[in-house]
Image (cartoon, rainbow, N blue to C red):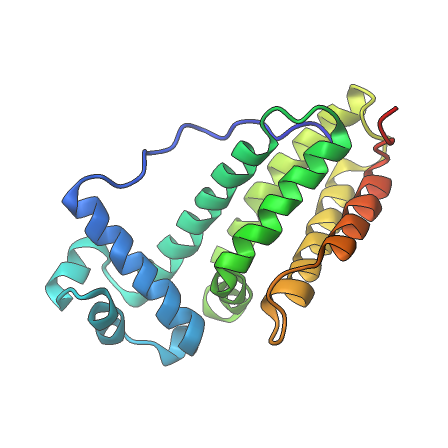
Length: 207
């Protein structure tokens, strides 16, 4: 698997007061939506937890559905940034896989509500769910196709492979990180995941 390509340049972490306020509202929304679900949550509860007034909320987000959409898209950008940083300097394809998915599992362990919200999106805004999956799948398909051309991994249909691998990663993180009673995948299972993933893409062991 080819190392993750850099995504488009992104804004620096919040520094202005307005950016900090927006980030505080998003953090509150993540917690409230994560605990109560979209339909069980209210803007009043989000603003109360964020420590801001309703007027301040509406300066940034026109509605509950819009903050829900913005939250999931923003967290996806956060994860892409984390994955990019994690794979920088990886020497071989298995190390790319190991670093990328260590980052994935650790990131979700810190924000399990994001995965729950992603799955709820099917019933809140199906078009949002499709876009959240389609965009990374298209990029992943392109990277896999390029890796196949360079001989890094075995040749097959890159679109089918992209979706299969995404499903494998998602259900693994649900089982060992998100679902009740689980907080983090143990090292033995994680290494098994890396090995199975590497076999699936045909990445040979180093040496």
